Amino acid sequence: MKPALTDLLASARVVSLPLRTKFRGVVDREVMLFEGPNGWAEWSPFLEYPDEEAAVWLSAAIEFAYGKTPTAVRDRIPVNATLPAVAPDQVAAVLARFGSFSTVKIKVAEPGQTPGQDVDRIVEVRKLYPEAKIRLDANGGWSPELSFSFIKALAGQGIELEYLEQPCKTIDELARLRQMIAESSFNVPIAADESVRKASDPMLVVEAEAADILVLKVAPLGGISRAMEIARGAGLPVVVSSALDSSVGISMGAHLAAALPDLRFDCGLATASLLAGDVTRQPLLPVDGFIDVRRVEIDQQKLDIFEAEDHRIDWWVDRLDRAFKLLN
Ligand SMILES: [Mg+2]
Image (cartoon, rainbow, N blue to C red; front, side, top):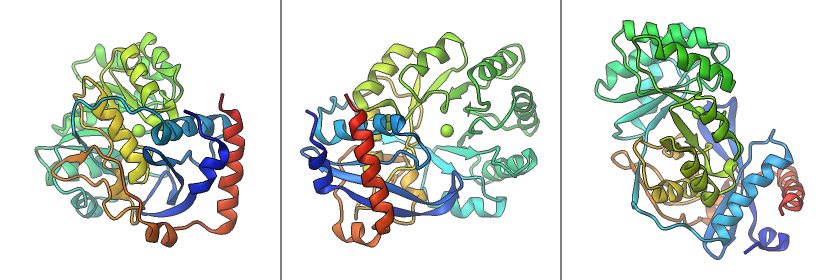
């Protein structure tokens, strides 16, 4: 069922949610929310994304608000803690917000920082949480050679990685690094994140043998059903992740993770902890390393508190108009 644009606009709200720590270079996260028969959905393509991409995110939001949700095979999702590229003395405070967890994803290769600063942050995590599984996310910031020497440096410190997420930018580079690892004595799986944005990407990654794991985000893949098909077609283990969403967007990711037959890694859906404000009184925050699979009830007062400025609302309404026209 496809709603009319006026249906979406009838309930649409734009909020600017403050972040606790700078992420992707921003200090707040603008999202549009609207309500359908199933409940609220979030439409929040990053501001710089072109309309074609924003339209794919819109399909996902419309499906979640108006469409059919696949049957869940689990009612809570194991999630990892996420550590932005902070200094070692901030690690304890940031991770404390996640409560208990068994996996931590550490951001590395932040522009302006050195690999040495990354190592210091990782060592601090290992010291504070000796039992935690550690995965790194470089957001494509390293060359295959730098990635490989980094793996070597960590091994020298006795630190093993659960996996390394998007160490390099291109699929070719990922494949080259994976080959280097295969020929070495190290055993570090590679996960593809930014290399999986469009529905056609997973097969490119699989054919190039560029990754062992796929990170799937529901919105950029066009919705839960589409993401389920992609996971099935790729045949690699997947990790469901958020795009720094409000609890509403995270709820959509949780419904995908709940429906996947095989979920062997903790998912990246605990990111509501990175927000200093949310749109509900019951945010989807992790409890004992899990988040619930449920719809999120919106709090009108919070919508008012975090409402974006008028000119930003106009911008989003125009964007919605353009993206809606691109839907087929
Ligand atoms: Mg990532």
